[in-house]
Length: 523
Image (tube, helix red, strand yellow):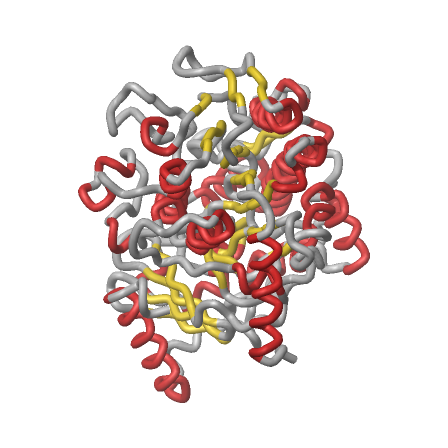
């Protein structure tokens, strides 16, 4: 049951009055690369593929407790958004849209072969940290926030991938990820589709060192790192005493290759993955039968990461090797998620020990989702639900509200971070923005949605429109998919060609067309 409008407005006003009575907030802005909805707190949300991997509820609960314990503890006193979506299921376009407020189909930034400021539509755009910096914030960070973690404050648009010249007072080029070596089932011709046990202790990995560096900055106000990547740029971040800060930290795992310290593999024995079996693999293949022509190239059935894994398994063990190979890849992904969570634990500890903790808002997000089998696909790069659903949590310690851990199931997007942070900071938006402030949702899980729908795009002409109840996917060739996300959260039954659903399909197509024509006002 939703609260009456007067109650919602009163709660929002209370939130804003608490914020208004506080000093300008600091922000800890944390990105985790390729983290899908497997996080323990979301394991029982409708459609979560963990429910297929671990069909026994007791086993699944136990696995979930091992997977993201640090994130789960933070969620219990934060606001988790369980229906949050990215603008594009690829690192560069997703992050660029979040940080600029511009939709991919407007900017033309569909891939990330070159830096976003080399595009005419984005050359002079004002990014989120740039806008905060212009209004009195100190901005600093390390790790993957834009597509690449390397910045060059004295360079050019082509070389300054982290936007060090415009977005940051201090940007540190930092080590990332973790070392490892391919396991038995990792395909030798699979490109970066490599997975296996790591070769570094946890506290020697790049991601741990990144998290530890930012944690020490929070604890001490100033810290230096010895894990700088290359010889370019500063090695120290010092928070000023007379400015609020926006401090960013990017964790690279669970991005490929799926390498993590060995102890994280031990948390996920493959024999527990009883749902990864021949029957379910055959069901996934059968699920491809109702895909339209435009969607077929986004599966791995003929080529792609899952095909490379299966072909290699057949080469070394025959057909019997396919299920063990699938399980080994999933084990490596889960180990990488747990490894990222350990790094987050260090970061959260630093925040809790910080003398500014009571005035620091945590915003944590993943840049897109990730398939580990559905639609015979292992990757992001698609407009299906698994590729576009993301992790998003906000913790504002200044407010007496918004600490209930109650899931917000309204449709939201990563693009909503820009206007939300600006509103909390008391900073105006620099211009039109496709985001919507989530401040009303911080007050109550029963607040009215801030948007009716959201559109995500993968490459030119391929779009997905998500409402609270349906998903409409339209491809460059005009072919489409339409799913009832209440009855069919795993997107198994494509209704796009059902005569009885023609009016629904036409309605959602019109919503998509309106968004594409004017994404700022038609959502």
